[in-house]
Image (cartoon, rainbow, N blue to C red):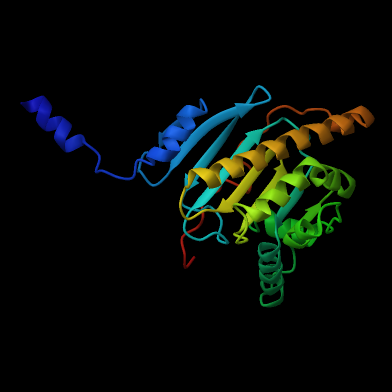
Length: 249
């Protein structure tokens, strides 16, 4: 009787089980688990003999409202490779916010408190790339190495973005693909975790990973600087997974 009572009071309150998502993950031999507080879930997968992690839950960026889908994968690429592909409405919003931050305050330099997405738009040149007119109008590209940035997007990834523009990115939600600190990141606004949208995002992410490995391989042939540097520290001064600060602060 006492054991039954303990189980009753320790039982977590019912919450969404995301059955369709968990079934999809199981069918694709992916690990699925709910977050401890029941506000999201995690899916673990892998490719190229390396693991990747997908998370859906509260956003970690101020430019995303509601819920966010995040994907990340450690590739051990050179940390010198810094490239950002993002939806055009988000690019324009971040550019405006960056301008306002530095013209309406006494701040005169870009510091570590500014998210990478905003810092890179201010620091790095916009990169032209070969793709369909629709893709070029919908997605902006910046990077510290323009040639490598364009090579990353052109070809398979550009074709994948063409399909995405007609699919899960049709309504142009905030969307980011990044090469940062040897990893590939995908981040986007996703109010509801629908299987079709998640599957399409994973497809884009995996093509971005393959393209990153291809570009890094070409660079490694020409310069020792592009050799794999191995794993880097997960937490830095400003990590893309840093929690979103409370409103009003």
